[in-house]
Length: 134
Image 1 (cartoon, rainbow, N blue to C red):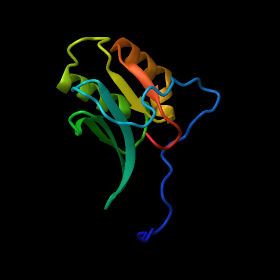
Image 2: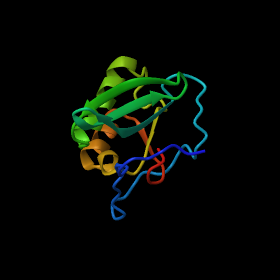
Image 3: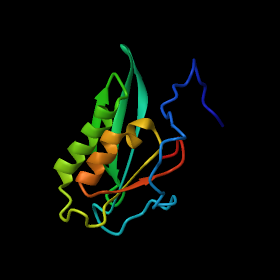
Image 4: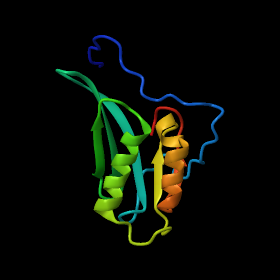
């Protein structure tokens, strides 16, 4: 069974094959034995009466709960970093470098220099899946 699709579906993941990416440390079994061990991120476009907006979110896999999110008219790096900042503020991972893995897809917002620098500053281990399946 498949739903009706009207119009074009927006493409949100644009990957630059020349950009080096972190390794995939998760390999699809999205499970964690305690909070703040594995976070996953992605964003999607949502149709509204005013047009499309992008919604970025960070989910703690253990709690199965959104711990950071941001809505924006543009899908730029700032927008995904704001969702990360909200998650860091809300959850305050107890031990910097304490094994928190942040998994996301290969979108340019997630592998940009600014994003990579922020994850390194927060001592979060990056993990990147394949295109379009964070």
